[in-house]
Each structure stands twice: as C-alpha cells, then as structure tokens.
Length: 179
Image (cartoon, rainbow, N blue to C red; front, side):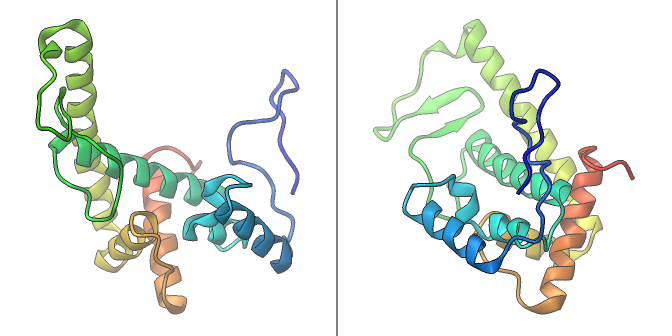
C-alpha cells in the first residue's frame, strides 16, 4: 500500500491512496487487527473490506463513508432512533435530549442556533443525496444502505454491481469524481 503525501510532506489524510493488489492474507490480518482494536475500525467494515480488495474505487469508498455519516447525523437531526444499534442521546434540531428526557435550555444561544442550522442542513443534504441514490435505482439504494448502514455484504455479482452504481452516483453528486 503506497501512501500519498501532502505538499508539506505530511501523510495525506484522505483515503486516496493506491492499493497495489493487496494480498488476501494482508486483508484478513488488517480486518482481524481492526476487530481487536489494533487497527482503524473502518477496515473491519464491509465497505472497508471491499475497498481493500479493490472491488470499489476510492471515490466510491469516500461516498460510502460520507453516506454513513450523513445517515447518522440525519437520525440525530430528526430525533429518530437508529434502526441499528448506535450511540447514546438523540438530538432534535438543536435540542439535546439526554437519556433522562431533559432538554438543553441553551437553544436560543448562538451555539444552539448554529447547531440547529447544522441539523437543518443535514436534513436537506439527506433529502438530496437520497433522491440521487433513488435515481440509481431501488436495488442500488438497497445495496448502499445495507452495506453502509447495516454493514451487510453485497450478495452476488448483481449486489456488487448495484452497490458500485449507487456509490458512483453519490460520488458524482458530492463531487468526489471528475466525471
């Protein structure tokens, strides 16, 4: 695996690094290390595995990670429970609700207004991205949601094609590709 460096010489923080035919044993060791907490957790996911095995491109991988983050933020923004196990308190448009149900009284502060704007933006972003994903087809949407949200492996070559198509559409939507 060759790491890309920034102009200042520091290792690049993007995932745009070349993967030179990673051996299956290396992929397995990296996934096992991620499961034990000795490597970055992203390599233990189905999306990370597909990227390591060069079954999806770097822009598709970035689109999948971005979709996962957007879905998590969207769930917090609308106050909906995640369909899969997740983190603690649920927030709704700037109002944080703890496990005891108490509200954060600072909603009219500058910080509260900024948080509310972030949440509204997340809802808008989710609506646009979901519309793009539906444009790729219902099977593509299902494949992307299954892999990026539920950590399910795509089933068969048709599942892989649908996942690649959905991630490609999202990557284009977010400007991650040149095409």
